[in-house]
Amino acid sequence: MLTASSREVRAKLTGLVTPEVLDDDGAAARHYAHAIWSCVTEPGDGVAGALIAECGVIAAVEAGLGSGGTTNAALEAGRRRWQARLSSVEDALDRARHVGARLLVPGNPDWPVRVDDLGVHAPRALWARGNVASLAGDSALALVGARAATGYGEHVTGELATHLSRRGATIVSGGAYGIDGMAHRATLAVDGVTVAVLAGGVDRPYPAGHADLLGRIARGPGVVVAEVPCGTPPTKWRFLQRNRLIAALSDATVVVEAGWRSGSLNTAGHAAALGRALGAVPGPVTSAASAGCHRLLREYDARCVTSADDASELLGAQSPAEPVTSGRTDDRTRVLDALSVRSPREPDDVARRAGFGIDEIRGLLAILELDGRARRGPEGWRRVTSPS
Image (cartoon, rainbow, N blue to C red; front, side, top):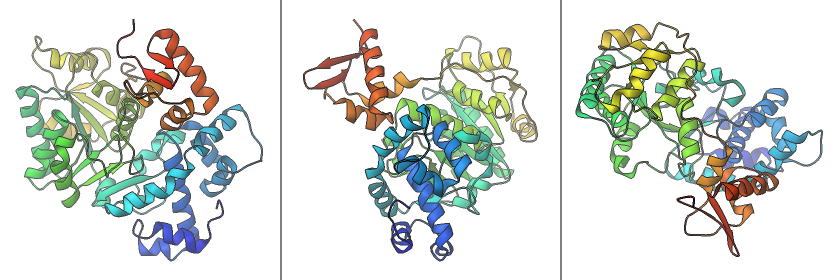
């Protein structure tokens, strides 16, 4: 597989997979192929997902990252952006080994089959620190909400997480400040199981102020998990893609507090699109921090959650709600994330960081320049903070 022998593959995976995988050449090759795809693609890359579904993960490596073979415009563009990241694979594996991360792939006994509902947009692999078995728990509930949470929101979150954890539910959230952090802390306080889903690599605690909290999760019965490899920084695009993973890992999602344009509505949209049950906690009508929850209740048929009993009912329900489109992003956001305000970057560097081919990135940069959000100089491209 891209010139690596069975012995070399086993060496690359040592410390990242179970001994049973290393003893099986076929399983080792499959794990390594998934790791490669995880390193060279952005989360949710449907072109890669379709190729893997058609060819199988090992054959897809040769078809997508080798030379020659049948092609089309989408696959050719994919090859250009994937091949630009091939050199990052070894570093990602080394970083994962250094922090004691586990590599999980579809078909692995600890693989959370819920995420397969994402179809061609499902993760190629998951990188985890902690008790990986907790990802496949029988009952999982996502508690999400605003970073700038109010005392009311944190109180309700703590109550829900505490009582649901005691009933055996796994609490899933995003590790952020505010509602997420309270969901994790309350679960840990009663020795419950909690899953923190990161937008960057599991070797890069984010936010930095939650490094201790994430460490406690990884050392306890829970797990810290990401679909991007170690060394990957969190960006706006990856946060939005991370939200779909939170929804997919859970049987139901409850939004505790959210502003009108909160990123938590993005998570709610993914939950609805997956047919997961969706709930929202009402708040004071005068509170901007609850405007998004009231919107979910009014416009998207979310269930009203006022107690742990209400949330428990969701775990056995399916939601007919339509996806919430607010908060979705596009390719331009990924390019802006790859640009710096201070340091000029060449198009090939921007393409590598954003996960695009060089031809795609030139077109997107040109559009951003017309919008006044990017500026080209003699040394490269910069992001413009305030369009003029």
